Each structure stands twice: as C-alpha cells, then as structure tokens.
Amino acid sequence: MGTAQRRPPLSRERVLAAAVALADRDGLDALTMRRLAQDLEVEAMSLYHHVANKEALLDGVVEVVVEEIVAATDVAGGPATGDDWRAGLRARILSAREVLLRHPWAPRVLETRTTLSPAVIGYYDGVLGILRAGGFSYDLAHHALHVLGSRTLGFVQELFEPDDPAGADADVTAMLEQLGGRFPHIVGMMAEVAHATEGTLGWCDDQFEFEFALDLILDGLEARRVGDRPRSDAPGNLDDRTT
Amino acid sequence: MGTAQRRPPLSRERVLAAAVALADRDGLDALTMRRLAQDLEVEAMSLYHHVANKEALLDGVVEVVVEEIVAATDVAGGPATGDDWRAGLRARILSAREVLLRHPWAPRVLETRTTLSPAVIGYYDGVLGILRAGGFSYDLAHHALHVLGSRTLGFVQELFEPDDPAGADADVTAMLEQLGGRFPHIVGMMAEVAHATEGTLGWCDDQFEFEFALDLILDGLEARRVGDRPRSDAPGNLDDRTT
DNA sequence: ACCTGAACACCGTTCAAGT
DNA sequence: ACCTGAACACCGTTCAAGT
Image (cartoon, rainbow over all chains, first blue to last red; front, side):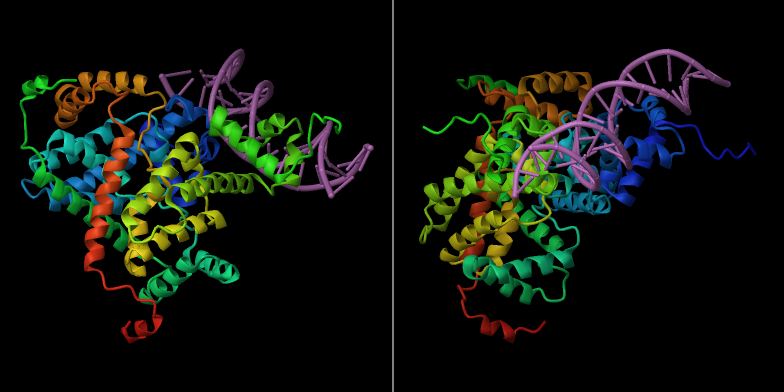
C-alpha cells in the first residue's frame, strides 16, 4: 500500500545516481546543477541541501563509479588472490576497465579530484594487498602503482580521443594526404597498421593496446620482483639506514 | 626612434603568448576570454578577430607549448639519433618533461583536445623516426606509442595530484590514522616509503617515479624489439596476409 | 527540515555599431 | 580592417522567504 508519490524525497544517493545517469546519457558537459535539478523535477537550489557544491557532487559521482568498480573487481579477482599476483591483478584491472567503458566520462572527472575518496583508497589498498601477497616489498609495490598509473583503475588517458572514430579517420587521412611528405613515418605507420587491422573500427583496437601495455608492464614488474629484496614485515630494521 | 606605442596591435601570436603567460601565472581556471582581454588591455570581443572561439584559443595554446617541446627536444635528442633508439628516445622524453614542468596546466588542456595539431603530429613523427631507425616495425612502433601514452610528451596523468603537497600529507596522515586498520597495506606502505624518502617533499619523488616507469617500459619494448620481425620498408608483402 | 524564487557575479558569444 | 558596447543565454551560488 502507501500512496504512490510521483516524486520521492531527495537524498544524496538519489542526487548522485541521477548525476551519473545524466552524464552517461548526455555527457559530462551536460552535468550542470540546473539540468540535474530538472531531471529530478526539483529546483536547482534544492540540490544544495544534499551536496555542498558542485565539486562535492563530482566527488560523490566518483565514489559511485569507484564503488561499482570495487563490486565488479571483488567478483573478478576475489578478495585475496593468493600467490598468483600477476593473474589476480590483471583480472582486477581488466574488470575495472569494463566498468569504466560504461562511464566514458568518468576518467576526466577522476583526474580533476584533489582529494582521495575512501572508495579509491580502499581500491588501492586491495591492489597493494595483491602485490604484497605476491612477494613485493612496499617500496617496489609503490613504484608499481606509479608505473601502472591510471591503468590501475582500468583506463589510460587517451591523447586526442576522437568523438567519432570514423570522422576522425577521414580527418586524419585528409590531413596526411594534404601534408604530403612532411610526416613520412606517420604516413608509413598508418598505411601498414590500417591495412593490418582492416575490419576493426578506426586505427587502433583499444582493448588490444590496453592489454599489450598492461602485459608489458606486468612483465617488467615481475622481472624487478625477482630481484627485489624479500618481503619484510618488520619495520624495525628500517632504522638501521642512514638518512 | 619610432613612437613608443603602449599597446601594440593584437595578433594571434600575441594573444596566444598572453594566454600561456596567464595560465602560467594564475592557473587554468583564470584563463577566460575576459581576463585574457584584460591582460592585453583590450575588450574581450576583440579576441574573436584573432581566434575563432575559446576552443580555438586552447588549440593554439597547445601548439605554443608543443612547439616549445619540439625546440627543446631537437636540442636534446638531435633530429636523427642513429641506432641507439633507447637513449635517444629517453633523452627526448625527459626533455619534453622539463618543458611541461614549466606549464603544469598544459597536460589538462592537451587531454581535452579533440583534433590533432600539426605540431603534435610532427612530434610523434619524430618519435616514430627514432623507433624506426632503431629497427622497430611500424606495428611494434605503434604499440610502443600506446604503451608510452602521455609519457611520450613528458607527463603522466597523476591521479589526485595535491595542490599543495604538505597539506595533502597532513590530510592523508590524519585520514589514515582515523580510519585505523581499514587500509592496512596503504598504512604499511606509507610508513615504510615515507621513512625511506625522508628529506624529499611529500611521499613520492615524481622525477624518480617517472624515470623508473619510463625505463621499465623501454626495457619491455627492447625485449619485444629483439623478437620483432626485421624492418620492412616494402609494403608489398603485406598483401600476402589473409584478413 | 526541506524546498523555492529572485538575485548576483561570472561565463562564452552574437550583433550592430563605431573608427 | 580592427575594435567596441550592449545584450543574450547560460553557469554556480547566496539569501531571504516560504511550507
């Protein structure tokens, strides 16, 4: 029973969910306080009772997406992946990537955050756990996070990602032909690579390139892990070092 | 001689140079058409005679920065680096990085461009040239560009780069203590790594991490280059492949 | 407690008008 | 040809007022 209210009361959760849906549907530029309010059939100023301001809204939106990633990666990798750090980390990162492909605007928001949300800290703690279980020192694990960079969360910053791949193709092709011999190597590469990947959309198979890079990095980390000093859980002996 | 005019006539070059200077001085958010005009002692609408709109302004600003990178890398790497692709590429990328450290806002603008500027294409053509001279196939060189990602231009997208390192340190420390045992690996890592890097500002030595990652990637590329098929300049034999 | 309307300070940009 | 002032459509946000 209960009377069917057409507009349930606003809440932080409802605001954030609507914000994610709006960005998914119309893109990040469409995510303004005013349009978000419109979607929720409310005045813009009502939103300020649930989020402090737009930055806080974006912080919340990141939380929602990262929680989705955590949920997906817990299924994929399991909480503890035992000794096979490489397979465990690989699976976790690739499943994070699947989530982010559903929210293509999310990386751009992620990059602009200035404070770490607990969800993100928790995610990185899990990644560190996998590395530690695999025998990495904290020092090497720390470097590993830097090398992986945004790949840890399943994305890389694609320089000049075209809005529409087909159009960009035409653009680039026209530009290259026009510019003749000025860029011989680019022209050569495109002639060869475009031919080889005939059938896929655009010049690059993004999923293939992502995994190629990920595997190259994991190989490099494995090589350095082998030379790494054994796992030390006792912080005491650190004091022996001279500053 | 010549009368000293206080306000030289506007030009695209003067507009772009002022835009770079404004962003360097006051940050990217301060780079608005109105404030840029103010710096140039002109009305905002005058700018539209020299750049089509704000997107075109940002395109131009990227051009200026990339040209600065090209000038720096030509000195550092030389136009042709011969056989030692690894040292040549490494020097080029590190000198690109030096330029970008002077324009910390530039990566964020670079990322939002949707069209490739000739300056960027030219830069990548040079990088490809180094790889080709080092014996890379176009196919592997293409993968190499993807693996290097934004590192090619001297930067990586730092997730959650704090505005002021010291403040962020305090924030994180307080947060971790407050959250107690919830993130054991993060806490462990920070205890160990912070101790080891005592004396540097913040948790990470960014330059060290950049070079660590770069070298790991270059190692991986070298290993794959050795197994790569020899350089083929004849596109004819590609036709032998089945799609 | 939660929501609203009017208002403010700021954007990018158009347009007709000035020199 | 180059620059300008007023205006428009949009932001995020404050504030006093409503229920």
